[in-house]
Length: 405
Image 1 (cartoon, helix red, strand yellow):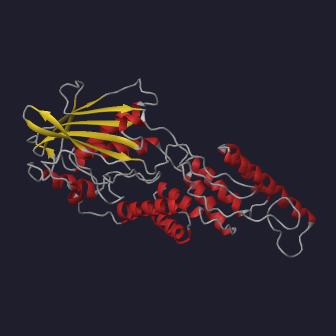
Image 2: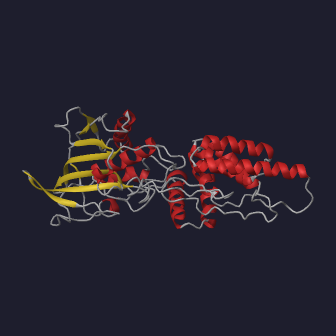
Image 3: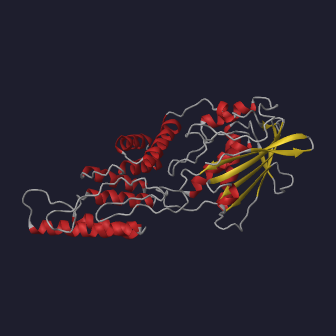
């Protein structure tokens, strides 16, 4: 990951510094378009569009030794020819549904899976895949029902626990989300998916269940105290409503404006903002881009440049990447945009990065489906920062310094 850097700048009032901070993608490959794992035969290849497959460990069932093309073994014991024909018919439809799923045609896949389950409702893998399709379509409650049935009918696919954890969190059932992710971590094999599950679990425990308090000012001021010294006056903010940027939506401006208000109201106006239509009188200027290269090395979702002198901030510029829909489960570009906006505003207020993944100022965005609002730790950290006097920084003689990630 590329470090943000502080560089030298000049101002008539004295030596100033420019600090550039950013929020990074959750994975180096998030927007690189790497293909999701595809299903082979009757194995379910449940890719999630992160550039790495969270569900790449799905077990490939062996082909039947009886010569049937279904890939499922027929249980020992007597079965009528009719029951065998029905089972094989259901499996053939299921295999077609797998192909549709791999082609990202979730609507067709769902229809075929319903057909297969009408013939044989005990196909656990069909229930599992239907649950994933529903999850991709944002129907998290229905997806949870299918995951439950998949487990009841004996599916051995441990990866459904990760997907179930995401759906449970989306339904605000954090106890089930915690149980599901812990179960997945006990069984999961992929290092990438395990790391993502650990992050998701940490967010659930700290932000939704225990509601951790305290602050992280020590981490967020690692390179010294930097803050606005406005004597109680609101900070003037200009938001460039660039409708010409491809992919830009009016909701992005609304989200950004609300994010400023969230920091203000959450801290009982320890910091205050006022919006202006004049960019020349603004102290914080905000804009959007659809070109990742404008933000650095292409991994950042947002970046903030802060100009300060002797610990007092006098100017900040925030640039945000226009986010679109991805193939991640329960992905919501507006929810992710809100997280990025809150993070970058935190930098504009003088905060550096936290070392904990459940804080807004952690250097990576939360996993999709686990986006969260400002927590007590976030708000307490800003309050603690603005109770300290602005003054000379410990790194005042160091004009280029890597920011802690």
